[in-house]
Length: 338
Image (cartoon, rainbow, N blue to C red; front, side):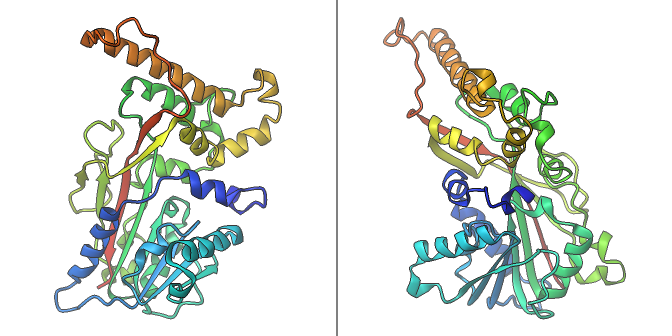
């Protein structure tokens, strides 16, 4: 997480290269909020807070609320979030949005029971939940909702044979060929394990444990994602739904996404001559090239297997500008204040 606070971190590149969250994801959260808990308490739509808001992509989707506050510890991200809100909504429609540089676990600027919805997109794995749950319980109104989610290791659904290479690049242990040793832990491990290590609020709150419901754990992972969790700390049954987060990108776009990884920044700090030692190609570019070569091989084998006469004999070449579908599994945790 410290990488995002460095002056060298490019928030604009990060915003342009990361996937955008689909409308159905937010609708699921709003529907859950509308249910109320218990039935005698009606949910309110006054104030929403986005913790670890980053570039503000998720923040601006909360326009159903009268007041929306984005919170991030990085001043660069806060500034980018303000710019994003103005760009997406227009300067004359941003009065309901504000952005604050602060830690998610210490929200002193918010009064007790003053917030109706708390969300966090791709940041919850960094939080100290022994501090976070009490702070969420403090600021939420009765019937208020908390919803946080992360996405983890990407997949290329057209090229399933490339999954082992992707996993090695992101989770391998070789410090020269993998980014695995360069992720900040335990945050990355919590993300890779689909948030199952985030404790239930009742495990943390002690004497105040009855003011929060047990969580619902929702996994938009589909059947094909082999790391879908089968366990959950919640007594509620897990909910597994089809993949919801996908991007229609290009191979060049995938390389841009690689350059947003905090682990790559750490790798380059530890291996400053990496590209010079490998004919001018960084570890990101080398892996990207391997993936493209693997895609060419898989496409050729597919054509041969299907007996594609029209394409038979033609060379298979994957280029940077070729379209590419990228998918990510999403883990979501939902709870309410009683």
